[in-house]
Length: 175
Image 1: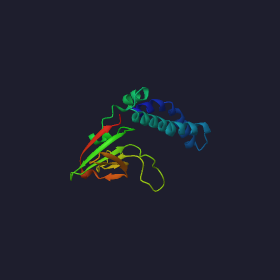
Image 2 (image 1 turned 180 degrees about the horizontal axis):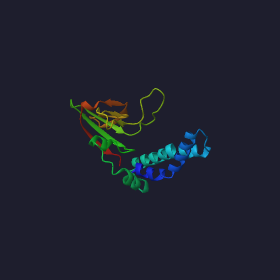
Image 3 (image 1 turned 30 degrees about the vertical axis):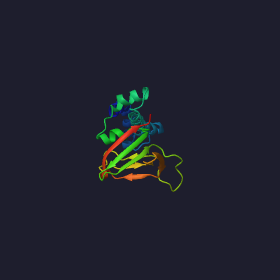
Image 4 (image 1 turned 90 degrees about the vertical axis):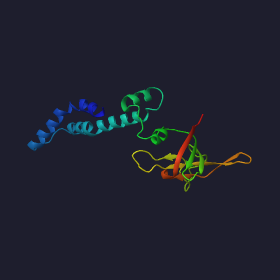
């Protein structure tokens, strides 16, 4: 769709490019505005169209006009894998429970870590690798440790979990 829109907008540039080419073949100079117009039509307009359409496509999960436009321009945006469908939602927050292939379970907050961000500390945002990366891995920015006898919860450091060690994932969105 962006290419079609660009072609419609680029049609008026044909006489400008023709004048630049004719003056170059004749060895003469051409007006500076023609070079500016060529720059705008060849570089600036496609960059603006592509950036706007990419931004709107990323807004397709939002509510309101931006989301509506994003769904019209970039389609609904079905993910290539269920992994990408879950973790591709911008601003996703909640609690994640990961069961590993050895039976171990890891529970953590899927969000920005509390009080983090100082130099030398791990990243403050949870992350999941996505398509087209073959390796699916998780980075959970804040783990939750549950002591079962008294059911108390404490938060601790972060964890990187390679995808091949994940048996399944449960996600509980923030209410």
